[in-house]
Amino acid sequence: MTATVTATAALALGDDALVLSHRLGQWAGHTPVLEEEVALANIALDLLGQARVLLSMAGDEDELAYLREERAFRNVQLVEQPNGDFAHTIARQLYFSAYQHLLYDRLAEGGGPFAPLAAKAVKEVAYHRDHAEQWTLRLGDGTDVSHERMQRACTALWRYTGELFQPVEGLDADWPALEAAWLERVGEVLRRATLTVPEGPRSGAWTAGAGRQGLHTEPFGRMLAEMQHLHRSHPGASW
Amino acid sequence: MTTTDWPLWEVFVRSRRGLSHTHAGSLHAPDAELALRNARDLYTRRGEGVSIWVVPSSAITASSPDEKDPFFEPAADKPYRHPTFYEIPEGVKHL
Image (cartoon, rainbow over all chains, first blue to last red; front, side, top):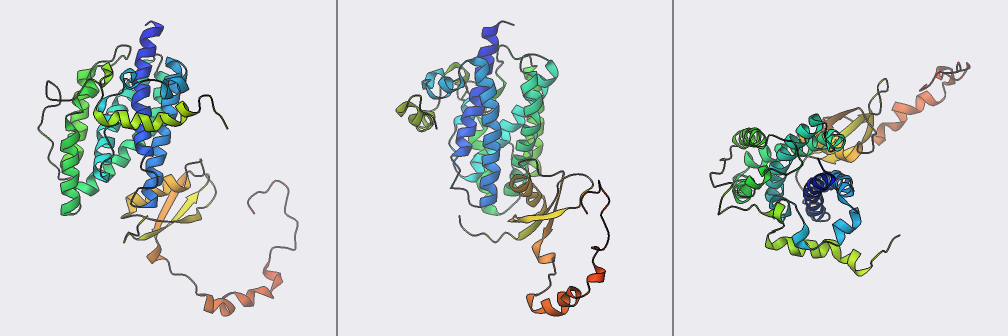
């Protein structure tokens, strides 16, 4: 495996972690309860830690995070989706953490350049997945309102999940097997939560799925502007 | 932050094996499983613990400040009950 291929793969994984971390960080000061604010911030910080390691494998972490244009980011479109209501955030977490856990588990076993990071991160991600599953069960099997909102969120984000299993060059994984395991795990959680597994397409013309190629959804540009403006306004500043 | 009607839970954390669980604080959570997870995030994220207990605050019966005198005052003038009359052997910790 060449260094370039590794760097490209590191960028894809690193951007996933960085962008989702920033989205979760946007909950700070806005969560309905203090306990949940700490939980989401905790997950965000785990992801930021992963992003730092991964982006450092691809180049200078600060330059990559703060000085790239939108089209240069390689994250999947799922992680850039706005927080929405709490159910949307939890559905996004459910879909992404289930995927990330399967992938990191595979990378940790594979012994490639990502094995050390994946072995450490897989424990963090196991907790992220547990957090999302616990909340999915409670919101889905909760009140009429929480059930309806959770169902709406799961359905709305469903079309972004096919992209997760587009093969990434440099990552040694059996993608169809990962996808099958993901569908089984997520389907089981949704059914236990009395939710309907969405039936919409997960890949193809009418679905999302070009984040890895640098095409992003409209809200991503605004998120990026917010994330980068301090660094761009004060280049090289430190405290 | 709005208030919720989630119940209050008391959190006990065992910092390492061999020590007992000590009270770390309290938090709100809708049920015991989420209380445990909230406790993990609030009280053990800097490596403080190896085990957590959560207990509904409503399940705790506490002594009342009004009963302070009959409860605790009599013990104060009985110094012979205190283990202060012998030397602690070297190397004994957590006593």
